[in-house]
Length: 583
Image (cartoon, rainbow, N blue to C red):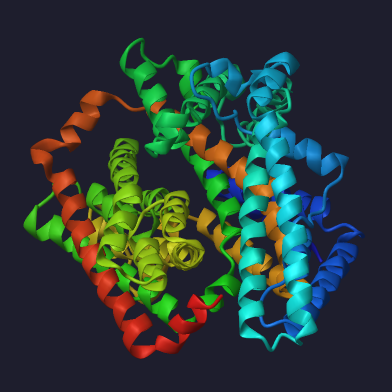
């Protein structure tokens, strides 16, 4: 009996000891957030919303059987279905608290505050156009309904009447879209984000301070307010209209503002105590795992999986070998972080690779900085080049998804080519995100067994010893990333397509997970800037090797990805391409 008690006590101590480490705190904090998210959005009225979605599906099915084209009623059912989301006072308040600064053009104050008088003045410029557009939408709808009625009288057998009716529906859609855009410009609501930002400051600060004492870290709360203020400034600059169009988002400005402080006045010790880069990043990446759904991988089939899961490791290995054997880069960890950043999925992959190979913060900063610059360029250049080559949207979207680093930039570049290219590009990038965990495990294994030989004489190279070494180097937070992906994939399957879109995509992800993940990433890269010195970065740029590595790696990525995408979507599986084109 005493032995059992002793074992139980030992187990308890072992589990508690885990929380001396950052990775396990990140898993715990992210898990609590995701549980809260499920509690918030999976209420008793979820079935009601799914039931309404089914009603709209029935209308769309009925209209699809009635006419050989999509009628007004079909589109209205789809629009009504797309508005379904679980929304109550609690979810709305959480969304408001997590809201980022608003878009602005000339006055940065408008990023945080807009009075009613200023809102009315801004909206008055578009009010008359909005009213005229609303009348045009009503008239075009009446015209379309009449055209559909005439076609129906002929049992939709008259091709000329069908063409007229279909064209009138398209005209109504154009007018409706114009009306909605003018509505948002004319009916401007006043806002004051400052109270919500103060609540967010207190919430994140207190929540992330929970594990500090257990990890023997002091002074977090004393400096967190200033770190948060810099992150708010980064978001504000990232929302400036022109800067945003150039692709210079909050990650870039978080780094810049942090670097300015650290390389001018210097970062005080109390600020460094709050600049918990990896703590923020790891928690944010686990939240990202909940959006990387296995179910979405299956939508695009074998071609998409091949383009990512075959090409990505090939490009990573070739780029790393080029840096190691040809460029002979002094820092193997910088080589690996940049290779992972460029070949897998940008910032998220760089973070995971840096944790696996124990890279310096300066190396992660350099890799991310180069990645951001090239991503901004490729986001604009790639779709233009694809249009110049006259590629179909499936091939173009797959090429963008496999080569442009940031998920946001992938969606923006794909949007330029149309909805098919956008959806294919986003899905390819989502599949690519799935292998972040596998990549981190591979890097950890390679580093522990082949690169880090500083303790080779003390190391056990038996199979069991090698596994222990890999486990010791493996970034444990990746387990949280994989776990979140598997759990949310299961929930996605359980809810079905409509239920998952309403409750997960438009509810949990848009309402809480993505906004909070954005704030954590912003805090993380602001923290990186605060703890980075230009003199250290300058050493890493020696001989221009990092830029050369990135350029050559990107050329390899573009070439291999295009070849694989063309082979899969045009040669081996052309039927899948046709089906995607018709979605």
